[in-house]
Length: 389
Image 1: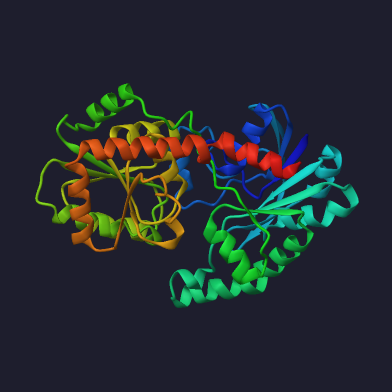
Image 2: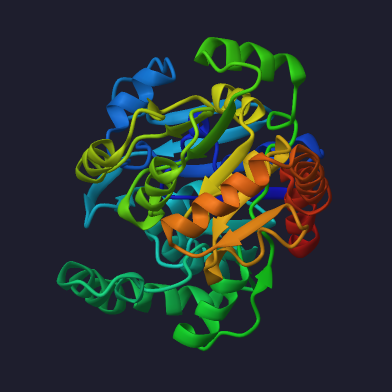
């Protein structure tokens, strides 16, 4: 099958769905192309992130042209302009599709310029169009602030009309979680979405005893000490301050809580002020380093749904998650515990799990099995290929 992925930003050095899908589909014997812009996503502190992983690139720009990569082909097109943080317009999408002549186009995210162009060219080029969506609410629904009200209006007036056109043109629509399925029903009145969860690189994110021992030694964690971890892009939606508050409350000195990632400087500054002596900030880490840290840890703490949770599951890490709708699928294997956003309750749950190593080991094993059977990049690629055909 000849497949073209159309995506605004493509950053294989950081992973993400579009990279893993292309890689796995190529490994399964298909001809795979990625059509994208000459920029990577405008992450906050992106220069620092690139430096931390040893990237040869110093900024977001990438060379225009064609590049072979791990069995698939990347076509980077010249950017015309970017507006409103992550709306990017880049030239030549339809022409590139006409040269490739794909049987299937997988356009990532409903409202992007690339999806608009893929929808427009579908009738002329005759391919099947698959569109995916990752969102599960409008911005104002997440936090009712004036800033979010303005962002919400921008979404409704500018992005939503493009998304509706994409939904009309798409042969199939993929949602990454049940909340996205509900969002498509409630906001767009679209009720035919296929639920295909984001996959985890289960080969890279797997438990290794040697990595655990080496990483704990590097961190200065003794054999009888406990290591807690959270990871991902750091912003106020992650609610990490509640976990810090819980750790500060706990009357024990055998705990270290490491926070991995970059993000909003103001939020990170607030976290640093709240952090006690048992909380450490490690900055952004490459996926290989992150896998080692998960192996070293005894418990993972998250306040918002993230691909990093599934990666931690791949490394057999038991979880403590906030009891919120957007995370209701992540503990269905009995691989962790839900908690309320109350430091006292969080502290009690952490203490109970740390004092029960057998329970933690069983939870971790069940989480790893869930990744292998339902959440791996290989499983995701096979499900997508079945949908394509």
